[in-house]
Image (cartoon, rainbow, N blue to C red; front, side, top):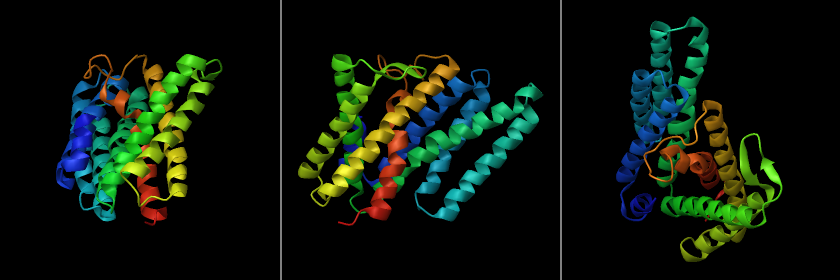
Length: 254
């Protein structure tokens, strides 16, 4: 995370995009290892191809992006067609292969689009602060006052009290970011963005918990000692990034 913040503040858009591609490569490899552990070769190739799809976000041209995604879908449909092991599992493997593309590089690619907007640096910092402050507040409030389980089938430890505390933490973080780094943001935009990204960040966390429980794993990976994998760090950002981009592009007016 410190490296990401440094790249946002000091790095060029190209350097930032390269960093996102590397993170996407690692995250997608984790996804396929978690969801398709017996398909290691195909998973690694798919991770590389999925990360390369992100290069189409550099020009931010819809035709280029759609072409890259279409090429990915066609190529891996052929991989499944000619390399299936059990025809009864072919449909499930195809769905998982496509799901990886939609879940990691496609959602994460919105950070590249967001960085290239006017005030892109500020928007990414705002999104990160909203997500991180919400996560910290949710943990503290849940540990201190948590009594009512939020979604025990998916994440037994999360509570309604923690979720509400996290939302207030997101609002506090957004207001602080506006006052310090982003004066062009109105207070209305600040509150709306905090609620939108705060809620989506929590939903992203729950969705990744659902995937892990479905795959029977505790963490998505082991690349970050004591913190799990890349996806464990990205889960909230994956859902928040597209919303931040669409809000900044369609609604925000400095």
